[in-house]
View 1 (tube, helix red, strand yellow):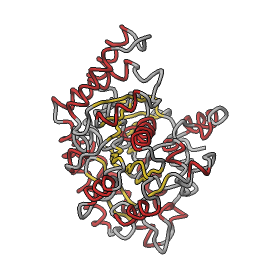
View 2 (cartoon, one colour; view 1 turned 180 degrees about the vertical axis):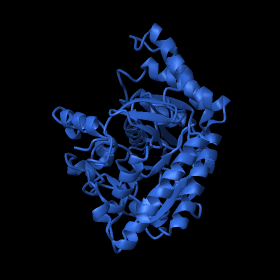
View 3 (tube, rainbow, N blue to C red; view 1 turned 90 degrees about the vertical axis):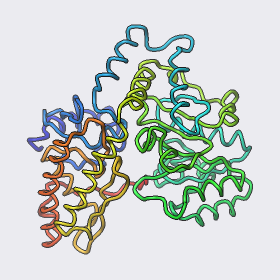
View 4 (cartoon, rainbow, N blue to C red; view 1 turned 180 degrees about the horizontal axis):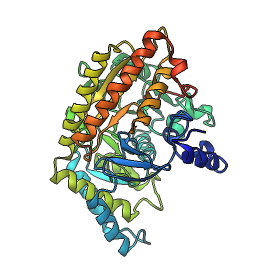
Length: 429
């Protein structure tokens, strides 16, 4: 047992007795955090900082998997939730906040004419696909990106255990920036594709008008065009990636950036399609839960009145450019590259003749955690990340990249690891 993470490891051992993997979320579990060199439980957060169960402090660049946009325990969001708590959390009829937040989203998001709420991104993407199937009378779906845990999507991945084959056969993945891969799906399932759902961008920029081509191809084939903006929404722009790129979908889904960490998601889009929800069953006891809606209203209002998104881009650019400069300084560009946009950027590890990408990433995580930086290879910027935070991150990277360079040169990465390397799961993006 490691001394630095003793309490975390004790809690993990206890949690695994009642919780598979000891976590509710794969991306927060021991599958992503190598044992013996990682924290496993966070007990509190404030602004850009979090503290683990052992009392270690971190500058957090995970930002709760992009769900925290303003920073932990944002005072305006917390005040709104506290005020609503005095009136109640859930009622026997809708609360006016449902309508008010829906109106706010319609005001901000280009494609939004109507809105329905869920609790997770998976609720929203599943609802959007069900609406598209009802609207078109078709069954098949083309996907590009990560769209959640529900059968219709996860059955198309390597994590398809428990999903009926008949369901898996209805979902088809296409390749980002490869329009022919989507055309092949339409050719193979002519007149039976209900929807094309895609993340508008993650690690790679759209090239040669790819998003416009996807929209055109979907419409020429009678399919509903859906943007999954679970992450890009209220991060790439106040109106999401559709506003940034100027490509407006028929439907869009939002989640992580909507309420600064409170559980709420949304399906939005053209009224003609959204009205299918009057008959399509997309209904939740907690869909109108008021604390999350109060948090959403406070978060969205703050985004409209303060330079939140602009700050994510400006501060993220300092991280992005500084990281690229350090990769060049240490001569490790053959093993690591950067991707994404400054507000949501990636460190992309590569296999080399002397080590695998998983060994390299494990060594990276081991060393950055020890230096008080919480990242899983992404920089999920929040409004709370300061210049001092970024300077501390880049100082840590300067040291860690030097260690990686030494391991790559000497081929002794196994000797430097104090844990077993991570193993690949399935690529969600």
